[in-house]
Amino acid sequence: MIKLYEGKAKIIYQSPDPEILIAHFKDDATAFNAQKRGQIADKGAINCTISARLFQYLAELGIPNHFIDQLSPREIRVRALKIIPLEVVVRNLAAGSLCAQTGLPLATPLNPPLVDFYYKNDALGDPLLTIDRLQLLNLARLDQVDQIYKLALQVNEILGQFFQACGVTLVDFKLEFGCDAAGALVLGDEISPDTCRLWDQTQADPQERILDKDRFRQDLGNVSTAYQRVLDLVLSHPFFG
Ligand code: 5GP
Image (cartoon, rainbow, N blue to C red; front, side, top):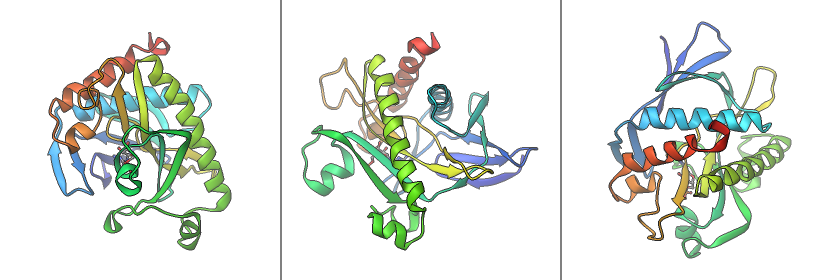
């Protein structure tokens, strides 16, 4: 297979059909703009399957996304998209950079949810954008931004309820969007414990409850076990039962 692109967590390969790509999920883990590097055992296979299932669920509920099917434990087939260089973060509870930048206490409820746009640019450290900066840099048209905003909130509604049914709180998550061959806006990338903050509702302890990449970022241990628990909980959802 011809490699088109290798990122921090995935490799993208060509397929015989130019409109279809193959995403291969790696065990490599990075944090703090790749200043911290490591491996999480079985992460690739776990995140691949979680993403596949969540994309399948989102498609069923009307959210256009790039997922076609899962080829193997670490590989999904996806529709080729022209990626919009934005990282769209939806937050239900304050955590991570929001706490660091605003002083809001951890777990402060955000009602309505907060939608933050970041410039997807590793060299610049993925800076937070304003609408004016987004337009200045010509990163997306305003009608696309409006559509992305609405889609991101719909995804939050759907995934928030999905995880609630699994006993997990969806604290925040990052989405990426692109345009398909017809120019339609489509959700891309992955949705996994690498890209979401997920708290186990059966655990009161603020460290024990963490089921996502914060375990790696904060050296909390049992990272792979936590990711596997998310997969088990996702698969336990009635939709897949
Ligand atoms: P924060 O802004 O607090 O660092 O991240 C907010 C949410 O978006 C978290 O769930 C985090 O995992 C996700 N996120 C933000 N930026 C990135 C990124 O560059 N890569 C990944 N994998 N997730 C990100």
